[in-house]
Structure formats: C-alpha cells, structure tokens
Length: 410
Image (cartoon, rainbow, N blue to C red; front, side):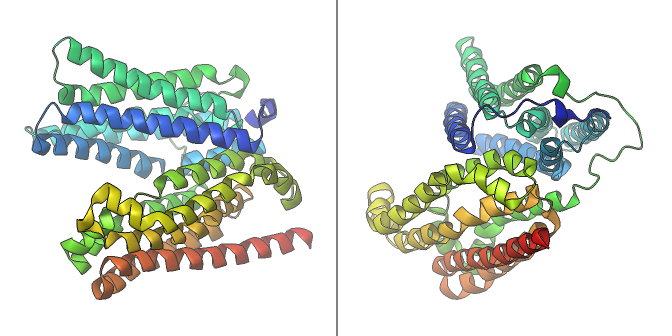
C-alpha cells in the first residue's frame, strides 16, 4: 500500500517558527486583500459594491459548505500516514467534481433568475478558492508551512497585480474584482500542486461511488458550528436593537489579530501532534512554541487595560460604551487561547467526535445567550455570553483531554 505520509520528509522547522511564519503571511495576505477591496470599492457606489462584496462572501461560504471538514480530516490522516495516495486521489477528484457541479448550477442559476445582479460571481470565486485550499492539503500534511505561506502571498500579490493592471488599461476595478480573486486562487492552486513533492501528491482518479466526506463528518460539524458564531451580530440586532448591534459590531472583531496568531499556532501544531504516538511525544513537539499562547494572553490583557483609550482614539466619544464591551471580549479571548489549540490537538489525536459535540452545543448556547442576555443587557450581554461560553468550552475540552490521557495510559 502506498501511504502518502510515508514518503514525506520530516518537517524542516519546529512548531514555533512555522506558526510565526504562517501568522505573518496570513496577516500580510489579509492586508493585501483589504487593499484589493478598497480599490474596488472606490471605483463604484456603496450599493453596487455591496452586492459584489456579498457575492465574494457567498463564494467563501460555498467553500466551507462543500468541503465540510474534509481538508482538516485529510491533513490529519496524511500526517499519520493513514491515507493511501490512490484513495486520497479518488476522494479529491470526487469532491472537486461535486464542487464543480454545485458552482456551475449556482452561477448559471443565479444569472438566469437574477440577470442584473452580481451574485453569479460567487461561483467562480468560490470554486477557485476551493481548488486552492484543496491543493494545500498535502503541504499541510507534510507540515511545510513555508510553502503554504508562499502560496498564500503569491495568491494575493498576483490578484493585486491583475487588478491594478486591469485598471491601468481602463477597466473598472469593481468589475475586475472577481477576475483578480479567481486568477489569484487558481494560480496559487497550481503553485501548491507544483511545490508538493511528486511522491506525496495524490494519484488522481475517478470512481463514481467514492464518498469524499467519508469519516470527516465530525470535522464538518465542528467547522459548521464555528462558522455559525458569525451570526452573533445579526441575532443581537434582532434581540437588542440596532444601537446595541452598533456598539458591539464596532469592536467585536478587534481581537482577531490575536486570534490569527493562536490560530496559526494550532494549525502549525496539528501535523506534529497527529504524527505523535502519545501525549508525551506531542507535548515535546509543542512546548517549545508555548511562548506564542503566552504572548497572545499578554496581548489580551493589554487590550483589556487599554480599551477605554483605544476606543476613544479610534472611534470617538460616541462609542465610549464600546470600551466595556471590548474589555469583556479581550478577557473572553483568554480561554480561546487554550481552546483553539486544545481542540485542534484532540482532533489530531482522533477525538474529533468529542470536540465537535462540545463545540456544537457550546456555539448553540452562545447564540442563545446573545438572544437572552442581549435582549436584557444589550451589547454588554452579548459580550458576556461569548466570554461565559468560552469558559464552558475550556472546562469541557479539558475534561475530554484528561479522559483521553487516562485511556492511553490504561
């Protein structure tokens, strides 16, 4: 049996350097994305750009729905050496075929039903991004973060070049936005495939009965539950009113840079943990990079202390009530620093079912808290609901980890 991970060379860097590299490249890619959107927005009216931006967001959602956790599951199996290259190739081709059909139906259907709208753009943008993320799976399984970082930057740099070149030759930036994003993702997918060592590439073939989502269901439930967290703002607007949503929405994404760092730590650690035969071996791989979570916690505390000043300087006196919300969100981010890596480690060690159940019920509880506490206390209630749920997740994941450790020893 040809096991892909069996041909993979050992990682060239440890968890810490890989996490920093991934966080840095992702941050630069986000800045380039923001610049691309600014150029597109400045070329048209807010109303027209709003539909284009919504189409791009819809395309991103399309990727998550069709993938449904398979990429994360495949990364774990590749890192373990448990996924045969032929089986991986069959699943990958099958998933791409489904994505192509869904994207085609979505694009053509929207164009026929709403011929004057821009929502058809979601199909090419989403499918190109889908291919790009799929091409990164073998590299993630090999823990080759430096190659993934190059792919991320290549994607957005090329997209920006295409957009600027099109504008230089007289095109409207907003009309070229979908083309630039699509070209960037497709080129990055080709780069990712090229950078993958031939022995580690999936052997592409098609079998009609292949189920690409086989055994990835709990990964899918976990990612779907996390995606549902973005409903907190519209639900607060419904329960607490537009004023509460405005105060909350003005600062509820300000902790994302810290989340970016801890997310990179979790992503970079996952292949190392999946390769480990015990918690002790996994810990020896991860502990050298613990300064990253520690730095993130210090960042959370800094934001909590400086919240009033930061809000006043950036938003002005009209949003002074947002300072208390930001402080609660920053403190509530501290358990996330443990939750995100711990959930990733547990999934990598084969406990994806337990993690998905915990996250699913916790996110449902969070959204319920937003409705109840948001209706009673406004934006403060929504922030408290988020913080409380993160503590609950921390307790539940810790109990799951302790039970898993006891089972391994027995």
